[in-house]
Image 1 (cartoon, rainbow, N blue to C red):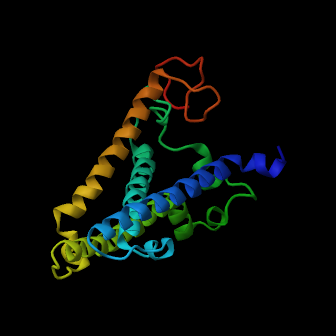
Image 2 (cartoon, rainbow, N blue to C red):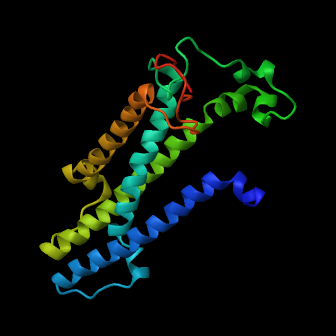
Image 3 (cartoon, one colour):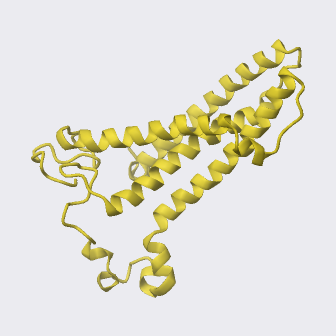
Length: 219
């Protein structure tokens, strides 16, 4: 394997899978949406037209929203909470890693570390900030896509007047969509935290060493 591919193989594999599955979601969602339009006597849409619909936007952002909430929340929670024996937890007695301190920064340290002050404060929390900002953007995308799809459904079924995004935010429909994803994301992470106490995956940084005792906390 070429060195560049080897060095970035995990990112390439994950983003490649994302592109494949997002494309398939668009194609199957397009077919489902067109079947619905035809049932109501409307003209079928092209794939390009479908990509601009609330049906597509809602489906995409509804899932991104829950994923980035989970990851942002997980990063924050693991900074403050521990689970004895879990490979997903920091050690029980660890409050801060020595190399997190500015006094340990070398010449190759990121510039916010070398500068200090506010840039360092932001940089120390930049991962969770970035993930939660993506969550907020996805939440907005879900809301706007959801209200567009809701209004289209109401128009097809009863000819009802459209509602605003603010009104849709107060509906059970919107929060049902969110909660069914949020609960599953946190369940999956909670299960991973617990299973990593007694189970192993050879070669994975998400697992403790195969020979590590169950009581060992952290990977």
